[in-house]
Length: 237
Image 1 (cartoon, rainbow, N blue to C red):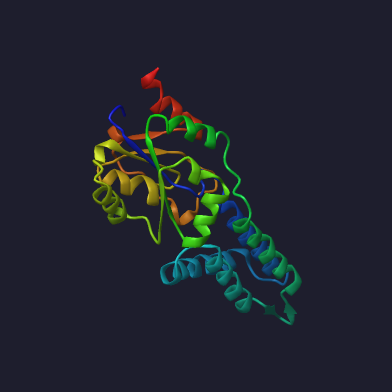
Image 2: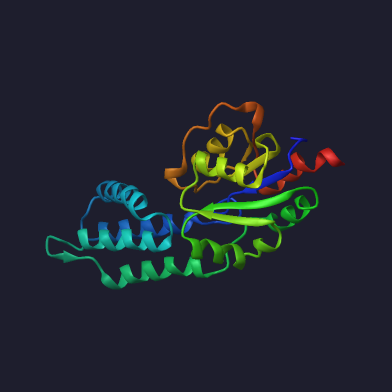
């Protein structure tokens, strides 16, 4: 990747943990529904269907996730005379709602690696979601201080990547995308002629998982964030 001039980074679950909070809240709600007799798989399937619908209609973000849980609470609030525990449900919402207001938990060596890379490359963030929420995460994590610019978009698809290339007058072959999502980060970048570095994450959102397309000459998979040094800095040593 000697020709790379700019590197774009995903944010959630690439720079810091994010989806795990959604997973925990979802599992806690399903357990709550199980307490009064609902079937785990039925509730999970209903959640999955509603999640897809809400994302399509309302977009991403923690507020829309809370909306999903509230809708499900109404659907599953009683069974055979038993009712969902309102106090426990409120606690699930309160615990989940803490994470977007808190400083993101950066993965190990993220800031130090970014600081090293910016000595050689222009660095950017491309993240999808609700504008104010994502902006606050970037600022609270201190990432805005080590990148040239950040972009927050409603969705990440081929056209978004093409627009970035055009608007910034970047050449695709000089641009690399780094992320954990095959669907949102890796495949769209590769289809647009860019390079891509994939950092698998154990709790990547299930709607962001898909097979990585066959662009092996422009694609690298690494295990952890600071492995980026081996890819982008070793050529200068």
